[in-house]
Image 1 (cartoon, helix red, strand yellow):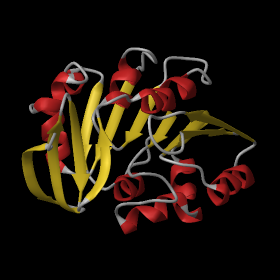
Image 2: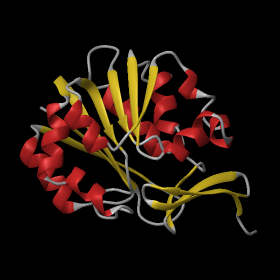
Image 3: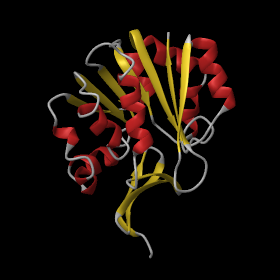
Length: 215
């Protein structure tokens, strides 16, 4: 079955496409597959596993809205006190707010605990000094495979410095990736006292990976 293109726009990453493939929605960024609605287990795990490590209802920052799975998990399973979502693509926000993706996560963007900011994550972190109990990084496909070249900097030392500065005491940095990365794992272990890795099997290819780092 040929995927049906629902919308095609010019985004920060280049051409951004929302399409339907059988019962799933897919987002394609500049010709590269970015995400879909087929599962979302690892995105939810990124939030819930991190929230289990903090002693109270967490204040959560989610870098990258995606298709809303992480946000829904922060609202329901993590029972977050407050949630800030930073997403640089206006079209992705609108597809989640009023478009077909709103049906995937039960209109999570309308929740009172949720604030959505349309901005580049690095820029927003530099301009805001709020600290979070859980900081979830899911802005691209991970350290080994970034669709947008500028996102590489988030996984490098200066980017990790910026992310670490926005963690509350005993806060947890959770990082989602579409695959493993030895150099990024080493970078986290050099910086944090505790690093745990969770791998989630997927239908095709290598498992998704979630890093949980604190201390």
